[in-house]
Amino acid sequence: MPTDMEAVRKFISVLMSTISNCSLYTKSHASIDELTQKALSILNELLTGADRVEIMLIENDLIVNKAPLRDVGVHGNTFIKRIKRRGISRIDFLAGITFAELKQFIADMSETDKEPKTYPHIKTGVIDVRLGGVKVDANISAEALSKLTTQQLEKVKDVYHDFSPFSKLNVAGLEEIVVNFIVTFKKEANILKLISPVKSHSEYTYTHATNVAVLSMVQAESLGVKDKLLQDIGIAALLHDVGKMFISKEILDKKGTLDEKEWQEMHHHTMYGSKYLARIDGLSRIAPIVALEHHLAYDGHGYPKLNVRVRKQHICSQIVAISDFFDALRSRRPYKRDWDIKEILALMQKNAGTDFNPFLADNFSKIVMTTLK
Image (cartoon, rainbow, N blue to C red; front, side, top):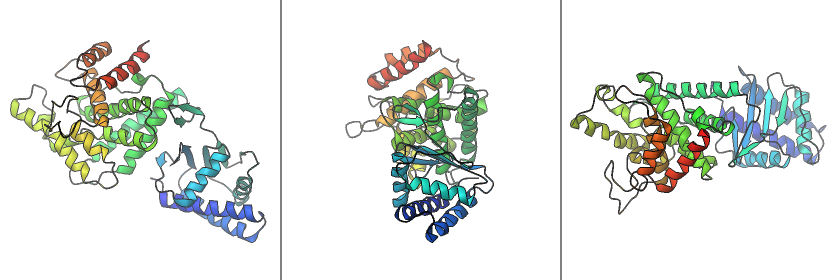
């Protein structure tokens, strides 16, 4: 069940009001008990059917139960500043929390000189691995990491199965998937361990989307991209081929070579996808651009045909195009073999300056080659 983010905002708002009052008065003041009880009631609603409410601070963004909390408001920003000053970047409120525990937590948080504590049903700590500006939990085991990767692949599968020209896209679900991807690749430095093999023909679409998203975010992060833009690139990469849902299954599933008419129709998936994504509220404007341009080459050839004197391929599209090319060649399909990693990188370097941005192609090659040493 998705987290009620409006209830989370109310909880943080009441919690900060209580902490502020506790700073002004004492924890024995009548208003503190009243506000603490209100905060506890909201928290217990959030804990209904769950074992915890997990709040993480990654840079300046709050992540609640692995999903970004948008529009945090004044109290949310104050909460971020306060926990930053206390050196905390993660708080878990566990089922079974008592009034006395929450009241003591509030009292401790109101005093700037007190060290963070651990309570029976409140766990505070630090996400202490820092790589490229993104912090993640250092205690994720290799087994848990593998499980997380598999879970995210299944979530992408569910999202793709729900795609329809007439359905509403689950933007929040995509955000949650991307945040978990970031957690995953920050823990595992070898990106080749994070991209999944295609086990069957029917799995190609969502497995490829997953791999392209991971590869694109790894590229972007290596260039210093972080926070909201990093997430937006991940979502755009996940959706880069969404226009294929408008292409007939006969063409998509054809095992032989497409004829000229079929190729022309296949080329239209970039425009179909861009138009579809441009109509979705709450989705980054990068997504329709990437959907339109991921088959447009760096020097302007490819498709769809654009007037390159007026507009060149967006850098986010250039990043996704490299990821798309790499994963497509390394995947075995009914009509083609799977290529060796070094073969792909050699071809990418050969086409740098025409198909691909030379700087990005070189950067990607360095990332991948590091994993092969």
